[in-house]
Length: 295
Ligand SMILES: [Mg+2]
Image (cartoon, rainbow, N blue to C red; front, side, top):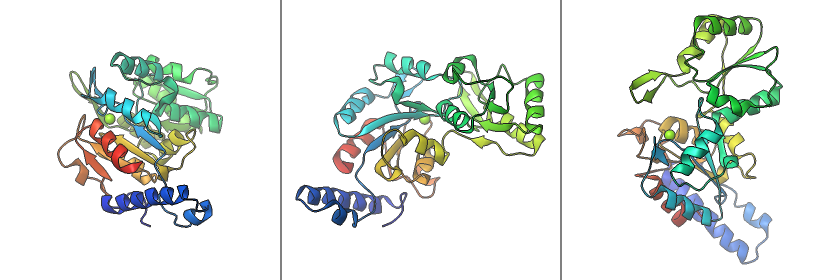
């Protein structure tokens, strides 16, 4: 069997096989016999990017709410995964609910959630360079006598004094954790510096490497799936970012579907290797493909 991220045709064949296996299962063959046909298993989870995939700023992608409802009627788990450094889960939830999307806070997994997971796992006490809006996702984390620096997009904190404090802490052995390393992002008034240049500045000054926790990191995707009880080979990711959504997910062993909305630019599907499992015009088209072919 080819690895995940093989050609669309190969992967389609795997799913065809998977559907045959389930049919055989219903006919009474033992699980052992069918698992010996190994390879990609039936789809159990769909991970969905938010900005650019379900909505663009305060406008929903046409038909996206209905498509999400249709997906929920199928027997797959759904989770929303996003790289955010400045919006808490609650902020994101409120924005999506205003746009009439049906979702719950516990279904959202963000790069802030991933940073929190890492801090808990390693029992680190962070100096949090994040916006006030993001702080609530770290409620309960001990920040006394910090021994880690967590960098998100925090324009108000990116001043000499704070960055110098972070620099000294890292020199003294504190871990450097980047929520993500975007070089820049799009604002209403034009392009603006992301957290990446500030993380890179600290790396350069201290000669260390940051641990990055957001998309496209493999651990981000495996953590997002961790409470869904399925393996990457049983999951698909839908997003508008070829590298961070689709490339990252496929690198983690999932299928990736690229949508031509949001930040998508002509030819993005050719900019990653292996290419996306599938490229669709919009989120509703991606859902239709999943319902018709992957379940
Ligand atoms: Mg996006």
